[in-house]
Amino acid sequence: MADLPIDLKVETISTFYGLSQILFELSFEVGRSEVVALVGRNGVGKTTTMRSIAGLTRPRSGRVLWAGEDIVGLAPHRIARLGIGYVPEDRRIFPELTVWENLDVVWRSPDSDWTEERVFDIFPDLAELRGRDGGHLSGGQQQMLTIARTLMTGPKLLLLDEPSEGLAPLAVERMVDRIKALKEEGLSMVLAEQNTDVVLALSDRMHVVEKGVIRATLSPEEVREDENRLTSYLML
Ligand SMILES: Nc1ncnc2c1ncn2[C@@H]1O[C@H](COP(=O)(O)OP(=O)(O)O)[C@@H](O)[C@H]1O
Ligand SMILES: [Mg+2]
Image (cartoon, rainbow, N blue to C red; front, top):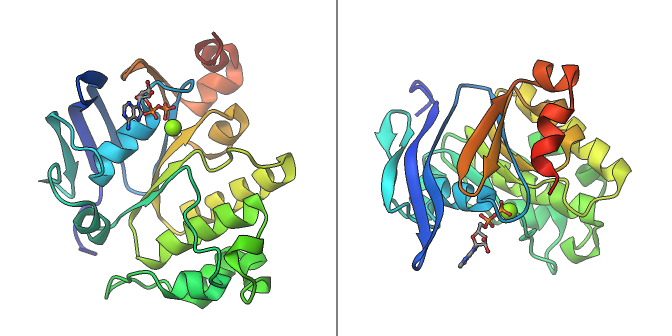
């Protein structure tokens, strides 16, 4: 896996829940070590896009190319083992296990170079809390632990679903710093976010999602020049 190209190419995926179509031939790409944001209001299909990539909801048509191979139809655990780590919105840690145990129980790729200690280097807050039960962490700490757990599997690409959601401003800042550190480690990311500051701080490219399609693509430079370009899409 290590020598293969790791780019993700989402090609015209259409995804449904039952009869209701959520994604309409949605396409985008993520280059190596790139952070690509999906921005948009609640209910536009950001999470569904991530679920479609992670294999949790199978797109009815279209392709998801990972290292050149179509992964649509593979089981979620197979996709995870190919190096795509999904960090869902709801923080799925084990509350009765300690921080260290939460990290220790996850499946690890044989070629994952992530260890508890290396994860603690990225998340020093967690290092101090290694003996504490997951259930006794703050929201921000739980979010960090959720990301840290996914790192242990050795992903090349992280799907980060609203990492700042529900966090206090200071915790959001810490989270942004840690995600930057991960970017510096060379991880590619798809970031679903509604917090424009977070998006601006982290992304190489922003796709505005509306009703299951990408309505606009913006660079951070364009948004810094005129934030309305982005915020106008996020208002009702
Ligand atoms: N399991 C589900 N069954 C049916 N509809 C769903 C399900 N999950 C999400 N939806 C609907 O799909 C649409 C997109 O949701 P979602 O992808 O979660 O949006 P976002 O992450 O952008 O808030 C919403 O209208 C939501 O109500
Ligand atoms: Mg969502």
